[in-house]
Image (tube, rainbow, N blue to C red; front, side, top):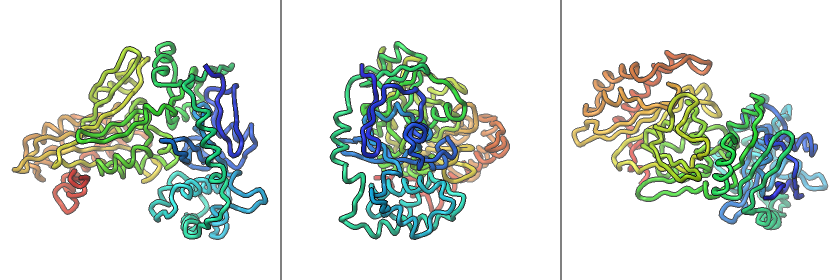
Length: 488
């Protein structure tokens, strides 16, 4: 076993053999490296003031993504390149064009959020030479600014994209080849084990070694994206020991689509899954775009969203409605179950302590089926669902319902199907009269709770209204938007 993690920080290699299992990148940067441009605002991955770039090798190429340093643990950084705002300006003090554009357009007022905004725009600048207005707004979803109206920030992004000199000094491009070679040399099949007085962290060299670790330490906390676990530490002050990091395991990051459906490894992030899912199941594209900000989507995994069993997770309802199958894995082998059966009750899932969520399979729906998913939240972007409803419908030639699957999150202690509503619709004409009669069946399926996101009455009425909305969209002018033929 190896006893240290190594990564590139700006222009130097860092090797750490003494690391707390839950030490965050933000604390390391600010307290140990005095790189204080990275700010702590919310400590939960919402505000973006702590945004840095993390570069990693993907299919042999070096790709940089914005992440939230406040909930990113050091143990997840082995063989990566961390870039902070201090690295952008030239040694003589000349600002990078992204920084200069923020100055030119008056994109900064109090300045607290500015470094995080700069890093998000820099990540966009590295990955997209001609971003659209929508691309810019998407890149800034995870950066909150209480002072400005965002328009000057968007103008800064447009300005820097329009004027891109070929001779520009860029700190990342200058050392890209060197960094890629260093990261290749840091990769290893060895498991990294680091112990301290605060506990032990483990970075398995392979999925097989991960399973062996869990067999020996079933109490371990598995960390993939840390978008949920990070808050256990920063908000709930929980002590975790041991902690096993898996975000580097490429065998869990496979996405592929064929004539049978879509296969998604449990370690696939929302960003990685977006292109395939949006192409194969178009209604999932807008949903993924509303899960956190870009930083969260670059870290969070679909497998993690399922594994933590939250009743308000955004992906389980549509995946259940689509009939997805979940594969679990341990040293004892693999087993597959319908995704809906994974959720037993609040806080309890059908997963043994030594098992991991391995992968997910979404069967390809019939070509003529209709599908839609609706996320209801107080704030459109970067907000947790009050409820989320998904509908998958197949009609026969006489416009009667031959099959329908309806699943909701936020309406019960687990993501749950509306089986009474489904029964009220099967075999009936797809009509206003049928929908009106079926709405009452929601009262048999769900008894939602009242909390700060929504009242029980609001949730119940909204669920019924979403069924009506789905009916109207599948019979009116928008029906082609939810037909699967649109993806073919």
